[in-house]
Length: 134
Ligand SMILES: Cc1cc2nc3c(=O)[nH]c(=O)nc-3n(C[C@H](O)[C@H](O)[C@H](O)COP(=O)(O)O)c2cc1C
Image (cartoon, rainbow, N blue to C red):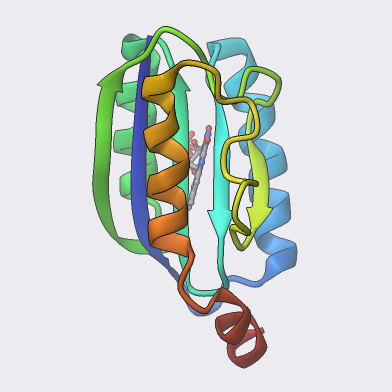
C-alpha cells in the first residue's frame, strides 16, 4: 500500500460549497478502489493525502493533477505504508489544519511524519486566509 501527499493552489472561483460536493463525489469514487484519505483546505491551498494500492493510486493522482479546480500541484511524498492513517473515509474534508487534527489515527512511529508535514504546510495563518478569501 502507498501514500501520496501533494500540495496545490485552489482555483479562485472554487467556493466551499463546490469543494464539499467535490469531496463527497471523490469519496464515493474512492471507496470501491480501496482509496482513502483526507483533503485539507485552508482557503487558498489544498493538501491531499491519498492512501491505497499503488495500481489505483497513481492513475488517480495523474487525473487529479490535471483537474482545473486547482493548479501548481507539488508532490510532497510518495511512500510505502503498512497502516492507513485514514482507514474509514473514502475522502474526508478538513477545513484548515488545527494542530492534532491532521491525522487522528496515527499509530506507527513512522507515520508521525504525516502530522508534522500537514502542520508545517497548513500551520500558517489559515484563519487569516479564510477571513480574506471566503
Ligand atoms: C483537490 C482535488 C482532489 C480530488 N480528489 C479526488 C479523489 O480523491 N478521488 C477522485 O476520484 N477524484 C478526485 N478529484 C476529482 C478528479 O480530479 C476527477 O475530476 C475525477 O476523478 C473524475 O475524473 P474523470 O472526469 O476523468 O472521470 C479531485 C479533484 C481535486 C481538484
